[in-house]
Amino acid sequence: MNELVARLRAAGCVFAEDEARILTEAADGDAARLEELVAARVGGLPLEHLVGWAELDGRRWLVAPGVFVPRRRSELLVREAAARAVAGADSGPVLLVDLCCGCGALGGAVAARLLAAGHAVELHAADVDPAAVTCAHENLKALADDGGLGAGRLAAHTYTGDLAEPLPAEVRGRVDVLVANAPYVPTAAISMMPPEAREHEPHAALDGGDDGLAILRRVIDLAPALLRPGGHLLVETGEGQVRAAVGHLTAAGLTPTVLSDEDLGATALAATLDPPR
Image 1 (cartoon, helix red, strand yellow):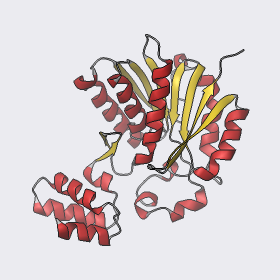
Image 2 (cartoon, one colour; image 1 turned 90 degrees about the horizontal axis):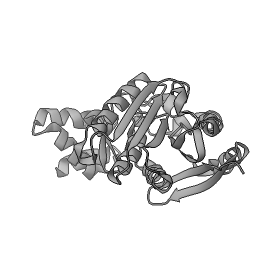
Image 3 (cartoon, rainbow, N blue to C red; image 1 turned 135 degrees about the vertical axis):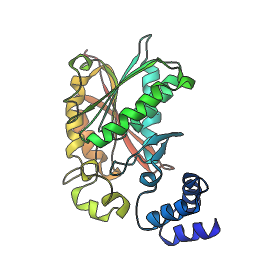
Image 4 (cartoon, helix red, strand yellow; image 1 turned 180 degrees about the horizontal axis):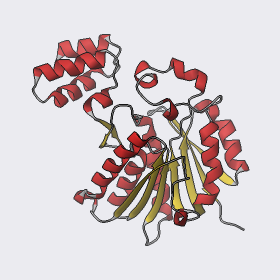
């Protein structure tokens, strides 16, 4: 194990000990398979694509090669979205929408928290990437079938398409919580990302345009038509983008709150659609 950790650390893996444990688990006692996995990881392939899963909020989510890998910093969105959903919940299912859903981990993790708290959930998740939507379908099906969280209390639907375009008309104006981990890396900054991201994840899941806010602005513009009065939008962003994003949220008629978690290295925004006066 020490030799394995040393090889991973020499390749630039910051969490070499954790990665060594995960790769060893994935090899399941097969020395040749372990060597194959380690060589691929040292060669720059994402750990999550090699082992087939990524962890978010204490749960493993299926991730296929070429699909965006959820980051631990998104646990800030999970935590805050679930708290707002619980605070505003009535006797019916929480209506949750996840745009730019990727493998479905973000919306699924919010739903898992709500199910654990005793709430039924209706979840709609959409992404432009068919491979990501395939993963999302499998992940949300597994969550719906998880008897430990109360099977039968999650109705999950996945769609391939641009942002809210594929969502059914009946969800519009009724959404309790809308989450979106939209791409927010400025185009010019993608070349400075780690190779495992820029070379193995789809650029559409990373590229936020010239200032990183091109997709996020579109999500914000869609939110008032999707949310019910008092409903919430939660999005992730870069620290340097907060001022511009807050301005766009305010202009769209939403009341924003800036969220941060230093331990996770995360910055996010929550915004509420205030009821008409």
